[in-house]
Structures are given as structure tokens and as C-alpha cells.
Length: 280
Image 1: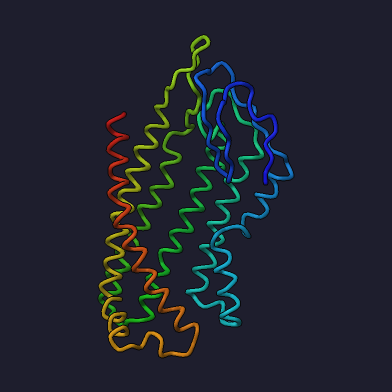
Image 2 (image 1 turned 180 degrees about the vertical axis):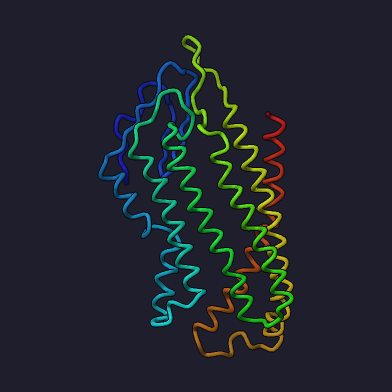
């Protein structure tokens, strides 16, 4: 468990939680600023272990064991690169603990943290997502030979990925971003123009990403549905003895499940963006 030293100097009356991201409960007093420090050894441990504690690592380890000498197949390489990029983003986020927080600034409490542990970290996170987005396409190509439908999936996948590249840009659109609280005498006013603009553009981008994701998902469902439903009706799902065959088919059902979750998630993001625009 990571230890917090010199937690606050009278400005925070809440609790600090840390899992690579920091959340503070501020008091009404803005006359002082947090002096939060982490033990260097603990901070370095989070950085060094980023690739091992990533949630995707156990699956990568399992895939390498199950595939043995065939680990270099394209579908496995996609998963490995996805894990590596996402883990690198985690590593950059965790380096935030190694830097000193600047006074009178909003999260992440310094421009270095914003660009290194937030902006560049998101480049790696989104790049990992982009690589991962090709996984269902590759899985779909394995189960169908319909080239016309595959081209449609390629089209929506490229559009979907392009929007994510724009999402990377949103972290640099206010360069340099102003995280400072405006200080007037002993009062810190909550002027957040750069942050508010970023939130509006970023979360609007998330809405577009979700919509294009649904279109991409639908194109995959239209190709997969006949294949999967035929297997179900024919009771072929568990007739094969190979564990890898069963694993692949379960993976195909997981793709459809994740698509459904995205449909449920979209309305909440749209409502959140509307609140942001109303507050601006």
C-alpha cells in the first residue's frame, strides 16, 4: 500500500486516493496549496510494474502459453501490441507521482503532468485502442469469406480510428494549457476556460467515437450473426474438442456483448456533454 507523506497543509479536509490518478476533496479555504509527496520507492514501483499490473497482461500471458510457437500470428500480435501501448500509457500516468505539484493549479497540478502523464499517456492509450479495434475485424475475416461485407467493416473501422486521432489532438489544442487558478489577493477564482473548452471538445469527441463505434459494431454483427447463429442452431459450439476453438467462439460472442454495452453507454455520454455545454 502506497504511503502518503505530509498529506496536506490545511487546504484539504478530505481523503486522497491514488491509483495513478488523484482525487482531492477541497475545503473552502484557498489560501494555501497541497504539498503532497509520495515515497520515491513506491512511485518507482508503480512505474516499473506498469506492464505487469495492466489488466490485459494475464490474457496476454495465457495466449502466449496456449499458442506456443504460433504466438506470432497476426491476431496475437494485435493483442500484444494493444497491451504494450496501453501499459505504456499507464506508465506515463504513474510518473505523475514523481513530480512536484504546482501551487494554485487544477488537476493534474502542473503543465508537465498534463502533457506527459495525461496528453502523451492518452496518445498511447488511444493508440492501443486503435490497434485493438482491428481485433474484431480480424476475427470476422477468419469466420467469413464475404469480401464485400469485409470492405464495409474496413470503412467503418478507419472512420472510427480517425476520430480517435482527433481525440489525441484535443489534449494539445490549448498549447500551452492554462491550469492556473486566478489569484486575486487572498482569493482564488475558479477560472477554467482552457479546461472547460477541453472538456467540451473531448467529451463531444467521445460521443462521435461512440456513434462510429456503434456503426462499426453493427457492420460486424451483420457479418457474424449468420455464422454464430448457424453454429448455435446446429449445436456445434461445444462439439469441437479443441480448447482454442471454444475460446475463439466465446471471444466472438464477447465482441457482440461489448457492442451492446456501447449502445447502453452512449445516451449517458450525450447527456453529460449537454450539461457541459449548458454550464459553459
